[in-house]
Length: 137
Image (cartoon, rainbow, N blue to C red; front, side, top):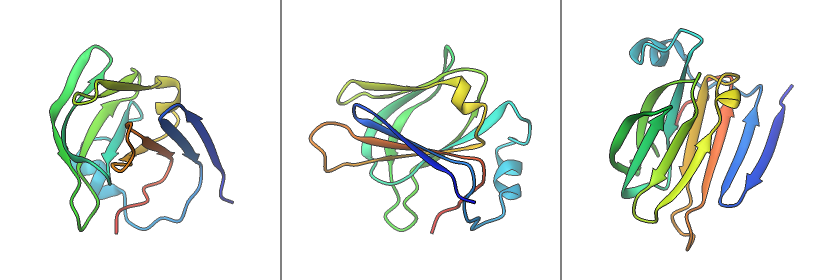
């Protein structure tokens, strides 16, 4: 059974996937990021990031403040472990655009993938919340 919810708020579209075809073994990812504990989720920045500076705050703590550029082959820009007990805010500095991922949603999903539509005049993001690791191709 595949269950997908789509919610759109302004320039941030959110999708929730409760079951999906698994394309890879998540154990290696969880081991590498020390994210086996239920308080951790993995945040993937995937396609559309074009070398702008982003700030990621987990609660009150800045956990990332650097440029993100998507790899043209993998479609992956970066991966960050987050503490899902706290909200996560993501700010694109160039356009001074911020959106927040609420802890109530983060606690329910282990894998969160964020992509950006770089062709839009205004920042447009898609956030996919998933309980299973989908992988990248």
